Length: 617
Image 1 (cartoon, rainbow, N blue to C red):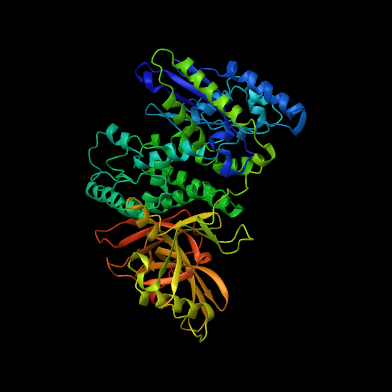
Image 2: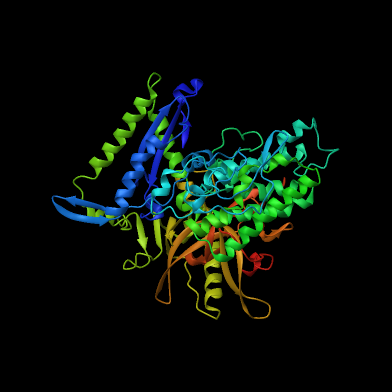
């Protein structure tokens, strides 16, 4: 990818980086700095018109590594033998076009994956055909009859044994969905309004119209939601109406997947756009998952086709201009095929490259010869990597999944012999029931704990009386590779900016038919604690549950809740494995305790009958 040299931005200098990710490493390690490689930084007044002179020695070396393999020796002893293959070459749309020797997204044959013929409408390149035939491997070789249709010369990569399909030049999710679709949805036809000399859509049925007063409220609601949204949502959660400039790709993705469905969609004046837009948001959310099923692929194909068909229909009705069908809209149609051929988009995301570019930007400070400065920085990182690889136990280093050593003061394990067992993490505390943290009274705690035992064992028991006992608790907990935090932890570190303590959890109870039923609830984790009942040790969670639960009227897959007023608490106790996921809460009305619920978990079943009633607990 090419990026501007910020020290000489006024002259338009560009630096292009060639970045390698080793897909053999597990996802939790492959994107760490020490496991990635930057092969070259290409300086120049502009992006290189042709990368072949830089790429040819790299491609030749990959061919050699693919045919003859790589042997790692240490002190004369063979440590590892392996063949190395380049399986994907990608970047944003212009970068991928350069790698593929494609004529570019503004050309007549504007797609590198299919044979679409674009049309020029009002001086814009429009992608009006959603049924164009797909390209084949032969489209990129000089012997193909279709070779001239958008492919300028044969790409270097066709000589690799791994080049078997056009999807070798993969779609990159951060730029396609983040900087592409999400940014486009924010203002899909703003320029078209200006071209038509229309200052207001009141007298014109503009598809995506939202009144200005509602936009102001939406921006304020999102700003007010920051304290109830966890940091697992990467966006800054600032007012998108006032602060849209300078957003990162991850900011745009959070805007698209979580802000649009909760606040923008219900404010749209025209109902016909709501369902296709919601469907698009859900399909993009699924496309960004690490695990995707056949059913997910079918849903994505349907959603992306429905979205493009909807836009085509709006164009025919003259409600929007054809220019809305930009390359990013077209490439969405190819996402399911890309996942089928190359695996999930997250596996070859450009996010690690963007972070690497950020590292280099901070260190390239030369105003005279930025290219030499960039080369020195690249060499320095390579030397660091080599030095760090010396005087170490390679076998131990390759055991990437071995847990880091910790002291017993940092955590308590439910089962020390089981690495997957739940753990309580620091800060740990021990206090009498009469002086529990977060203002929890002994009566509230005892009542919640006994109600838990009653639900769990469904029979008359001599419940534990903890009034004179001591509670061993913690501010954080680890279970199933997820770290959960609590209100106690927030108080401990004096954190008020984000809400990392909200969760969705599932609890079973006997319904009025005396049948055991499981329902979903939203609440704030107060703290974690250890308990023993019937000689069985267990870790439990004290949660301040919301007053009421439901779903929004326009999307039965989106929960909504009403939290208790300040000072009002309804505490419940549940197990670790009752927690479904972390959630964020988004304000949508002037009422301070009314929220819509967002999460990284994607629900496929209607939640109307799944959301519980706090009185059941």
